[in-house]
Image 1: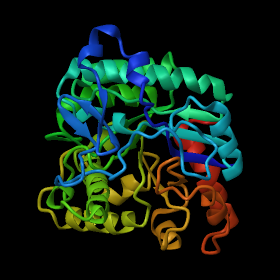
Image 2: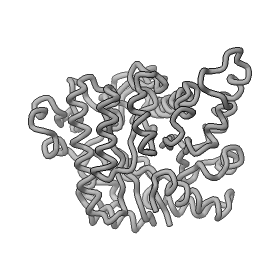
Image 3: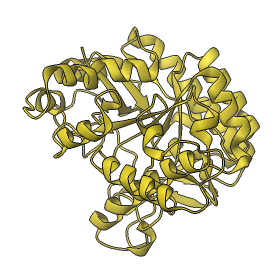
Length: 364
């Protein structure tokens, strides 16, 4: 059995036309076209940033009607039930957990009321559509983290009323780090719910450490924008005492592989042990939190060094992720490649493919 711990439900081009509350439609996201590329425009910003700007996004934009040529879907969202299920069968995935695309970065918008309405629209969409998949597709909520009380309210609604199984946040929320006491109402609610909190970045919409240095090539921007964001995220969640204070939250760090984590564990421990002043509310070494039920990480199907990561981290914290249907996913070979690995045992593969993500997301 296979659980894909990080697939995607891209926002359809007409999502906000269909689901955004009417009082927000005038200032809601619009689809615009520049040089044959479609962009979202919201608050006067183009998402992703067009090529030529520092920290730009993919040259193809995020709005497209079909998947890769070998995919059956005719929509990268959840509208084409038959096509997505066919692709899951082709890939060998039994349950897919889907994250948003641009809505993963909802906490970086300026207009809190609009952001909250956009989150409700997206969550209503995926909640409605997932019911058509007979349990094979489960969705992750977007929340307006700019207002932690509103974010907590929407998270509870998404989980309790819509059946969503977790929430996504970036590793850095605008000018605030995740250990800012400002976010306590949100983390308190997530802890009460025992929620999965996916830490995920989408390159090329907003500044992320490192990516703002580069106009070209996109290779550089994508290389640094995602990992630095998540590395700061895990550092502040541990160093700021969030994992200690809210132990029922299961954080998962996604889409940058798992090989970075042993290095970052060593570096955090080294700084913790050398510090004359340990962070408040952090009685254990950072690596102990990483090895606890508070922390999971996704691996790439063919990434090197997985055996070393397992040796350092243990085999209970790693989950499989396909990134379907994004352009850099390895459809339809990701599960096959993972199963053919010879560097980890069949028992460990079974944990990564099913047991660990099932525990992370509460899937039985």
